[in-house]
Image 1 (cartoon, rainbow, N blue to C red):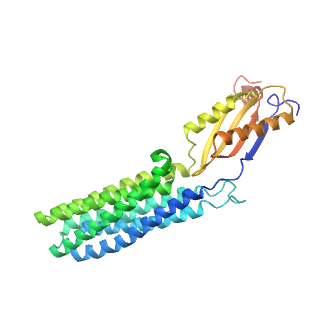
Image 2 (spheres, rainbow, N blue to C red):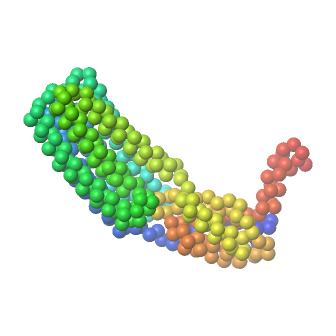
Length: 338
């Protein structure tokens, strides 16, 4: 090939170095998830026992909430372990999207096990009422008070990690950590609603307060599940890299003296800290094949240095004039073509 970008096409691909696994961040996230799991298992058992003793729909709703959160933490632990597996022949871009898949399952768990059961408890309380047991309700409130302290401690641990990983913008990029923060924050609010409903039920003797608390907990869980599920869906179906990263890549390509124009730029997240980059570029005339290879290697290295998450970089060396001719009426058979 004597000339690149004029009358010829080339496709140059590459994997930019070895993937940096970010083991330290994963270890911190794993500890955060384990803390949340331990808290939720103990709290779920206490809430369930207290709910049956007191006959409290709000407390039983909170027990279902904690059971759902416990199952979700197991999903997140699986995500942390499986998403760091190295690429293989069957999955050449790695297993980074496992993180998004298990986060989606966690969102479904919150919706089904937490939200739907809470709605059921609230509806049952409105229809059939609930048997009051003052001693049981006092015990239930004590359980919820302990749960509030435990959930608050778990939330503080998660927020501390978010801050240590760069704040809300960067720390919440991890779907596992984001899910833990959402679960713990929802749990604190849910416990507060349950306590309020139980206290109002005891004071007024009207079960409607506790039923409304259960319905409010259900609505809260459904909303959180929807938000988490939507984010996981966007990442699973192929979300583009951050606009700021894409802008840096496009600016870098446009600044290369050998590139005449950047015809197209595509990016896709393949994991928490990895992305695929594909660019179609038109080179200046007069470059031989060896020169094209040197330019491609240099450009790929520059991209991975500028945007470290760009693990796979593909350059499509195209010819604008040839492509326009191929897409013209003569080549496509449209009216007016030869």
